[in-house]
Image (cartoon, rainbow over all chains, first blue to last red; front, side, top):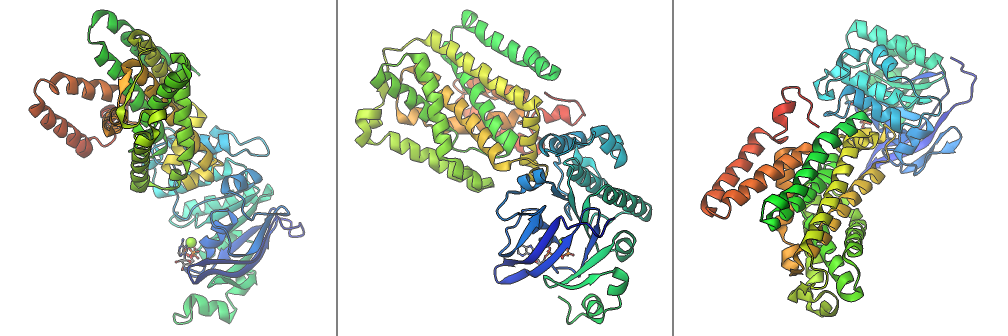
Length: 243
Length: 306
Ligand SMILES: Nc1ncnc2c1ncn2[C@@H]1O[C@H](COP(=O)(O)OP(=O)(O)OP(=O)(O)O)[C@@H](O)[C@H]1O
Ligand SMILES: [Mg+2]
């Protein structure tokens, strides 16, 4: 990790409304190449919405997102993929009737990776999908679908990767394994944002966390520090006031 | 692309050969021609429904528009029939372009809007005020181009083109990306696929196919009324045949047409009272037990169906 390097992603003052409800209410943060940034907060605090805005699925109602110095306003999500942004889904949505191999082939062919795209065989091996490569994605279990979703993203060679609860539902051995993989990706220079409820996992892999509540940042820094901040504790534990 | 070659050699070529030879040994040429038309339309439905998931309830709109495109070129511009067929294809594409906003709708909304659009085109064409151009409700009669033998050959050429397109979709990264869009448009966009463009291309390809089919149909029958070439039966039959065999395959719609249109012609005219019953039971059985079509009998066993 190189904390000195300039951020590749800048989120500034982003607002996203659903009807009158502010899912994001002036959210600002940044993320640098090689950095693993944790995005944590209680259910409904806007983490997935933030990822949806950064990956172009939602247009923000205010504020701006810049990637690599250029604004992302109004850019279609497949073009953001071509520019180097990708993400996984909290609930993975693979192409169910296509085989695992075909799922990956689409991303390899259409991702327009700036550098040479990764090899199919290597991806299948590294993410433990080789045995099921020729089965329809519908046959995979939840953990395998999550890995396939991750591989779909990686096949496009992103420079910014947004992981939405990738670790949820993995067993402890799988957690250790995927943590190492994520760290290795960051070491290769990828900027990675990890949304996760598993604090041990976040503590283990992130350099820095943003704690969100009600669409806003309420803390930024080390997780070890965050857990001593009364406002953060209240948000996670104090029923009444939590969003 | 070896599998594309195999599909051409073992499915497309034999089918075309059989329909090229049949008129020499079987005297009901109109029936053979109708088979070819339904093979084209069922594959056209396959392109748009099988590969993108849009159910075109108003598919006949392109067919009828193509038939009238042919008629207008022949009546008013004395165009040679082959040119008029190509123009019919373009009319189909033009109507498809006009209707691209429908692709924003999904599921039943798309199906109903497409149906409404095809009715709108029918009423436009059949409008007595346009008698000078379309002959309105009085129908067209094209004596100058009448040549069923050539029109049949043209239908085979359109079928070859259509099957070629489906073989391409079945064997190319492009076809795979279309299926990805059908399965999950959001994930497809996150694989880098331009979802809107893919849908429009498939939509226009299926419009082209139906427009060309309408053109050769007009050429073959030479005399028709708006209600003939805009009959909802064309849409329903093409959809049912394609679904019965199994979409997103090359062979499914072919099997569907041969079996269902075969049954229709075997018993449909002689004993219509049984026909309705058998037809209804077949389709209900399909929906209940084989929602992915007849080919799923094989795919369920793990066999690969081209
Ligand atoms: N498409 C939408 N339409 C309406 N409301 C939405 C939509 N997406 C999210 N919301 C609302 O915005 C708020 C933030 O949702 P979001 O999914 O971003 O939360 P989250 O932090 O990811 O929560 P979780 O930890 O449960 O995944 C929630 O109250 C949610 O109901
Ligand atoms: Mg979420």
